[in-house]
Amino acid sequence: MFGTVYVGRSPDGFGRPGGADTSAGIMSRAQDAVTGETLAQHGWSGANLQGNADFSFNSGVLNRTGAFNIAFDGYAYGQASPAIWTTYEPEIGAVKHYDFSRAEVGLKDPLLLTVYTEALAVAVPEPHAFVLTLTGLALLAGMARRRKHPVRAAAHASLS
Image (cartoon, rainbow, N blue to C red; front, side, top):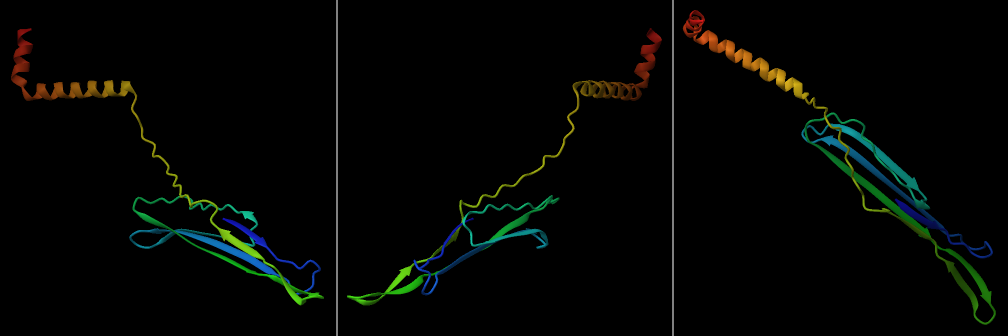
């Protein structure tokens, strides 16, 4: 957010003083898309902003596999009234003077939403694990083949 406040003043301090103030606030909410359950909620507010005021929201860990919605709501308010004083000019008479106050508040930059995700650790087998697995499968296939054809295995044994 950014804001500026300038309060008008008369040069001698007499007359009606000026006034100015600002306020702004932002709320964020994460909700489950199906149930509407609130997963995280945060707020920020500032008043009489002079310059920039940064804010960020951290939902913490959202351990969700389903869809969820993130919503942002906000407000900005600025109000100003001038300082007014009167002087007397001999040729003209009473002259009213004004020093206008200013109040401005708004978004400094476009709102940027960044979502950080955590990658799941996936085990990647070492090459020798593949060799051992294939060797074991080949031995099992050979044993299954021998059991399927016991006569051939016996004839083979008697010939040798």
